[in-house]
Image 1 (cartoon, rainbow, N blue to C red):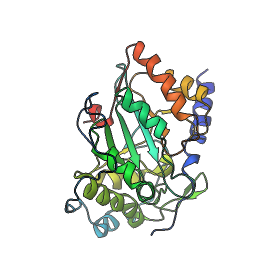
Image 2 (cartoon, one colour):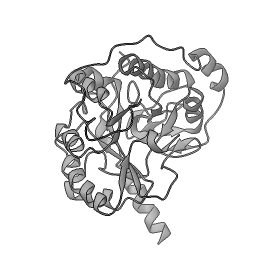
Image 3 (cartoon, rainbow, N blue to C red):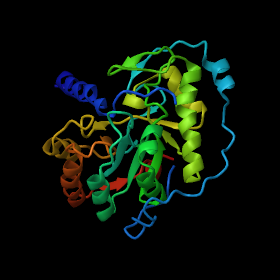
Length: 290
């Protein structure tokens, strides 16, 4: 039974993040949500830019400390990776990736509209390429306390110190590139939102243990997931509903907000009332992870 369950979970993870598209070449969170706070930002409004803060570590320091280390793990978990909320209470964190790039720069207005209407808080992991393609939606999302803005990287790369790939997407090749993938979008989000995002999720959610140590040393929490809610935006609405409604308390659910033609919006719209009726609450990551 345990082996069968592990096989099912492995299969789900294998299809997790294929919807984000291949990476292009190198070219935070709000406060507690309420129904009244939803939609408080004017459409297309980007918060005033602020000067960048000095990084916790410089690129040179990261390379000096970690450049000689070899990895021992690879996957969506491992040392230093947050996969759940560390509780069995009936709380669930809905997280939505916006990966950007040629295959994934859409904006699921139906999904976000539903979350606003029902005042459902969520953490949004935004890639720099998606922000480029959606400046007006980004501005409104960043201004809404209902949503917490998190970092989904600069080029949407798996985090590796050896160039390891996931789903055909080549990863960062060394410690310096790990720093670039995290820090470039981190600095951008701080300038735009006004505070640095606390959470980072790698492209495809894959990382090795050395990259995880680098992210932690940079002052971020590296977040993966415990429930793959939409199979990389490939699930039907029914599959999304059945997967999300069976999430246990303390789950971090990953879905996508960059594929409006997928079954994610309808599936989430069906799952949320079901879970609320059974006493579950929805939270942003920062509400539970201190």
